[in-house]
Length: 420
Image (cartoon, rainbow, N blue to C red):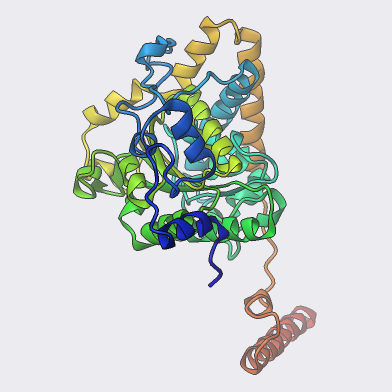
């Protein structure tokens, strides 16, 4: 295993028996050390999340006073630009329409399954918009809105959920990993890509998405520890929607927050209102900037809620009450952002109509695309298993070809037989 050169300074200090001075801990490098010096705070204060979660716009759509946004030294965030906010709202509206349309397509039998992110769209949109074209995103199975906001073709993005054998899109084209159904495996993929990019000297930031349930997996520990040790430009974005299918967060962890897990790995953590797209953009934009500057990995926990069932196969009423859901409906990210933009004069009736028309056009594209019959080639069972087929696969492929040819011949013969 190649050892990162980032450890040289502190290794030399350790061999010399030197103790790091206050505010100049040699364990800290790049932007982390710079932040500690700039704000005059301890490394622990920088790495630990702010005492209150970051929230800029309250659930009624009103901008909060700066003193009430949860910021403090080392955890300060400027407001995103008006252009970024309008783009985010448009993606929010489109994402909500996509979620609802896909749920309808499942009921119609045109999709096999769909894990809706209805209510979590702010997280999805902010995740996609904070990245540059050369950055990578590794989504979960629930992050379809983020995948499409990243530029992946709508129908291709849904191919996996209609029951096809492949993902539907080329990950390298838009730098979006395949939506992972196995829990947490995408975090390891993300760390691997970040490590490769660093070794190549590429200016790449990787955003790795996961849910609260993923933080209970061994892969979560391995990914964070490797990223921290090798000082990789990875942002671990945890969408804490309160449930790992039916298991509430209280039965998963008793840590003060999931963001507090970051300090145990030597990285910075932050908590943000996951239904406040303004705060999400601010926090993730800054995280990307820090990672690109060399601060190493960061962990961002977004507090949000899955308003609908885990998937169409789940009965959410078995483990949560309607009154609980109603509390989160009042915190809907879509209505909150609409109110904020309208009050700020950035959104009027014409703008709202234009965005609604775009969302409906996207829904129409999905319906039409997923209604088309997909041609099936049985030989695909063998083509993409190995780059060079094994003798066994070649034999099986030949047997299938022979059987299909005989079936086709028998069918043609029956059609040409004259009726008695």
